[in-house]
Image (cartoon, rainbow, N blue to C red; front, side):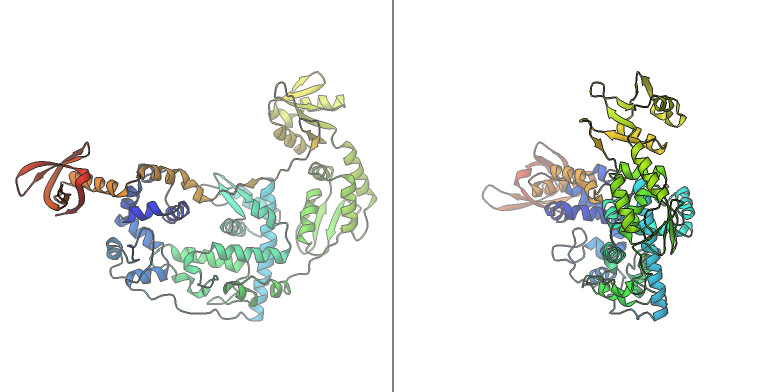
Length: 555
């Protein structure tokens, strides 16, 4: 019985089933489900079966259509054979399993293009993730990236065109490096960790993540994936699959797992991952531009990287300088504002100088050293704390002229600052006040309740909740509604259905002497633990205790 199998399944398996069926955890029919009998009935409706079959990969469909065992929660019986409603839906479907096939090796030119594309993807994707850490990207109702952010990413030379931005954000979402929620797209904690790794590590991690994200129909039995030339036919009953297949193929192309060719060819570094092994970036890295670990610090407060800067160095340098251009040689600019951000994030004048001295091929120029010293001296001139007696946020500074400037600064009007003697008060939280003053380029720090300076990280990381957790309340409600006696619940449900449909039943009744007597009844009512119905053979009304009914079947 499907309902019993669903009730016996663990929560993870149920959540996987509901997710595969694209079921909203709060909308109908889920909102009307009271127990697993309701679930089983809904999942076996013809429309639901057709939708479920369209989501099955070729090998599973071929097995079900050929009456081969394939164990599922809601489409097969206990022996793994397609249920009658499923068999009816598959009537006339004849499919061969996925054939054995291997992609053709890429020639050197195609492999070179694939390596270049992978490098561009890795660097651009890292820039997008870093940008989203500071401020989440906007998305429209369809889930796509908003036009304003597409334009901004193009203007900042992170991508060449808006279509590239869309593709990279989709790739990041598919691999779990970004996650959309409501009208925003955030970098995940996995994405925040990924940007701090080296280029080879970034590529290997991205290959692993994409492989794990591939739909089951694209995966092979050894833990890898099937020949990309076969991806288009992986889901024969899904009319939308060809477009989806092109999307997955584009992801593989972006990170260099497939190369140019028709059908797609395979560069040498993709084979270990395709065969289920650990991705090996060494052959790919040999074709990538050489990364550098030093820059030229200039008197005009800029840093020039003579090549792609090592990712870990790039990430730290961008905490203290704004990148102005991005190419093989990138330019970074130091400003009082950028250095203040670094100081607020935990850097000191000493750590800034030490890092830049080690990074620079030309030493630390005097103008930059002076800017660091001046910014560090002024840093913390404005202090933000909390008044424990009122809960208000307090803004203070020993510079009375600066305090008056803060009180009339139009950029700070949203904070609602109110002058109170030698300080300012606001009902805004400390972090909101801090970032408002920081964005307005004031030398501000935050104090905790003990008066100690604390660093605030503006990075906004998406939570790590799985979509499967959305079904927790629904599953709990179904388990509560199921009760402990599944047989009794099923029997009562069958009787209620027969009464509603006015269906004649053959009822097996356990007699006091141990025998079983079958009665043909036209059920008319159910209540108080008893079934009422007309005995067609004897032409009398009977009332039977449900507890004595051992089985029912339709006449």
